Length: 365
Image (tube, rainbow, N blue to C red; front, side, top):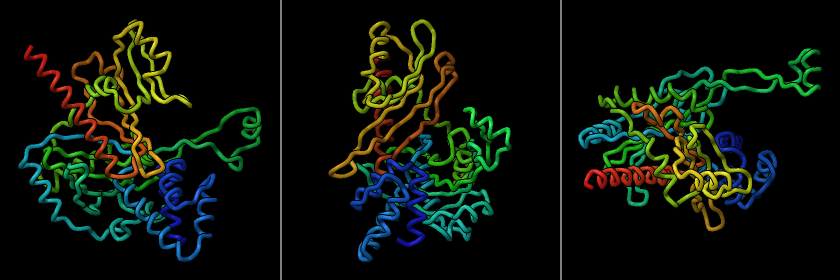
């Protein structure tokens, strides 16, 4: 395995974690291990005639992750002429001469990334059809800064610090880190819809505002289209909880006595609908107002494994009582392909359509 392929494998693991990387990289190649370093050693020890397959597989996994991974997503409903303008304009774009574009599809090294600019750069556009849904996906990249809290190594501590640590103390510091984000614009022509996704595989959601701004600015400057407000997703919290598909992985809610509470899946649990504490609360007081929800679907990745993908609707307590509060974004997690991203988008759209049908029925009654 050459250095470039080894670097891609390390980038894959950094973005999606070891557990998922082991499943989507190691298992299809018939190689397992207890960690990244042993996996690299085992792949490097394979016969020379298998090294090409290893490189091709890891490259394909990386290409899929450029469009998936963990993403903040916003949905926008547009007019047909606006969709047409966006499609026509983007189809005529070419890559610039930046280091990002010259290095594509590979990420920049940390050293090159530090000296790179912070603009948004067009990389590629691809058209495909997923479960009879046509889509055109545009990939853009940008450097992003984020804050990370790390525990200080002993070599950086004074004698007092070493004593404090030996007594059970934790000494941490905040550092400013840099990453390369791969953001996307997904156009769904027949649905007159576009989805903007921001790469959160490394960068936290709390620091994603600039990337969101760059995506919206790209559309405005490139196509002349000013995006409307994104679709409000807050109604999906209760709607998607009530639907029987998938597994509820986390939730936050307001109890009948006005207190807030939250739950997350514990080891060994499958779905919070069956959680004894929550089930007891639902029985005692059927009206538990939910404002945050996580839902998992186990999608078949091959004949021998399924991978859990998750949608998180990160509502806040204040959204319950304030009519002007809206939830414009959601988080998609653990996806390893554009097909999985579209699966979750379709689930969101189906639930939004269900909410609209219920409203229409109430108005007609």
